[in-house]
Length: 379
Ligand SMILES: Cc1cc2nc3c(=O)[nH]c(=O)nc-3n(C[C@H](O)[C@H](O)[C@H](O)COP(=O)(O)OP(=O)(O)OC[C@H]3O[C@@H](n4cnc5c(N)ncnc54)[C@H](O)[C@@H]3O)c2cc1C
View 1: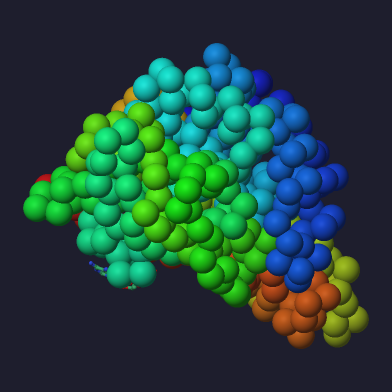
View 2: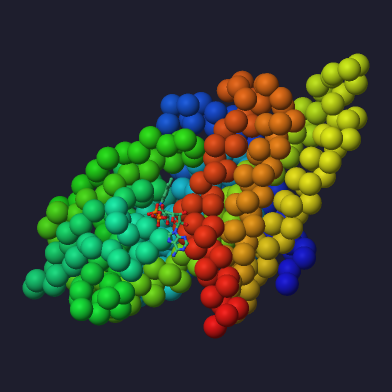
């Protein structure tokens, strides 16, 4: 169990915090309103070496541990949750499965591109009829000569319209159920690859979310990730790690809500006093701060266990479940503290409130997190 960041982790956190305050936070509200993808920010993050945070040095990344990575995602999400999820998907859901399951050729080909931010990563798991039940996916992949031919539709894909490298899953052997699912590294310029509908959402509006359509898409057979039939295992282990990133995103959103609430409550006067002098407000702030601290410890614990090579599925699920609930609760309280102003677009807490809501849905809903936690206890 980690209780304190080391010197290097503190230095990186402070560097990212300063970068996020200067480069990410100022345009966050506008990008949200315009549903504008954070291209320029991602480029700058790549230059700083934090876009591909977990990519090993031999493939052009900084090779940071997952504790440091989680602090990076928290700091970025504190400024802009959309940029936070794009970064998290780029690392946890795209680079990580290549690092873990890729051949040497796949690593050498794709990881430097992701580290340099030349292409953005995405994860094509969910389908219209296969969300929580990913094993029910219908997309197919058939080996014909040197290529797999993929057909199917993926939905709700973060960065979908902007991604250049996508980890996607399809059924290679229907008879075997989830054990007949395989993973592939897809490039957006493969023949037969198409971006489908782009979703209008209530939050994380600057992270574009779309369908991806595969129509007789030709995927070179060397782009099979892992072995045939290992796709479901790859998807689940990838999502285990992804949940640490989303939990960190939730902590970042909650932390922003707390900081906004503290500042506002000190300057807003009613009944001749700052509202921070009222116990009702103080208690909300105390509850927010306590839950955020607890959530952060859960995130750090899961990240630390991952770094130690220990099993961490349960811990990641706990971190995501609790952090998502904390983000929703903290942003709700922040709106209450801001009163009527909190309900307007003039203040950032309404955006935080909208952004917080997704953290209990993607990369496994809160109900699925409870299934993972109880499943590991009742085995
Ligand atoms: C903005 C956004 C971005 C996303 N990004 C990505 C991405 O990049 N890549 C990707 O692959 N997917 C992505 N997703 C998809 C996301 O992971 C799914 O939406 C999520 O896993 C839930 O699946 P579903 O929406 O089909 O809901 P369903 O699975 O239909 O669930 C509906 C409800 O039923 C509950 N439920 C389902 N099964 C059970 C059960 N056995 N027991 C109890 N309750 C259950 C769920 O918890 C939920 O409350 C994204 C989604 C959104 C909204």
